[in-house]
Length: 346
Image 1 (cartoon, rainbow, N blue to C red):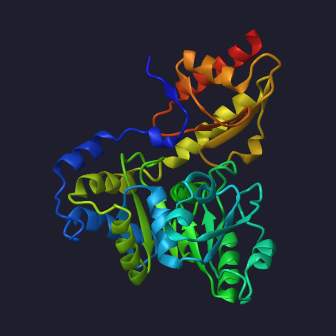
Image 2 (image 1 turned 180 degrees about the vertical axis):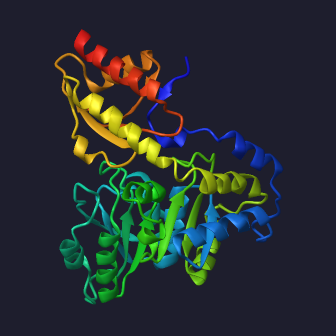
């Protein structure tokens, strides 16, 4: 039986339409900016996010890295959440490769940053301090229950950033999920950001790639940093073609994943031994905690694996399940019944 894989929406396979588009894509050398399919994708991405230009990159981590490098000089400081992907899961690249100092702000449970605390954390011009240059926001916020951050919050961040002469980078890896959950256009969430990164290879199901969007001059700097970190690609149109299909055809169906996540959360919340707050399930990501006298988190993972179900343990006895295009209603029922059986049989 094919495993039911809830570890991430990155496990999605490309659609038949994507495979066909990849096979027949018109391509050129993208380092020379001569790949017509990449250019088409970048133009489309810039239009969707309300920006002047865009750059196709290999991954979201690369996109975030080169965005920070393009905004900052060595020794500058950025403000970002303690639960943010850039801080937790990008190998410290901004510090290791850019010499950029992260100043950590405790995320609110809904993924927002406490803006009074952010303002207090902006450095003065004292000779002893690094220069605060950038505020990084994540939307949806992966490790804060997949929460979507509202246009109103982005408005408030913009007011603060403008007051202090700072730039805003938006890690929008799942920004289309946020737009679907809030029932707004993507540019309502991106308009105040100086740079935006979003992924094609998560819920949108493309096999590879992310986009960085911003002003034309910013994207030219980012292009150079992309080359510096080894991200220059040649006939990348074969990959960009799948991204075009994703953006044209798959953004609206993300609401199905959100609906499925709520269905699974409802079932799990009724299961003895599971702690889950259904009110926090806003998009396609579920977090829950295991409470069982005989079953540890590691054992729970092994028991699920034996039943061909994969989920991710993010902390001791804390689990994340991510719904995506390849998870059906029947599979949701299988997962719910299997977990209930495991926890009641011990």
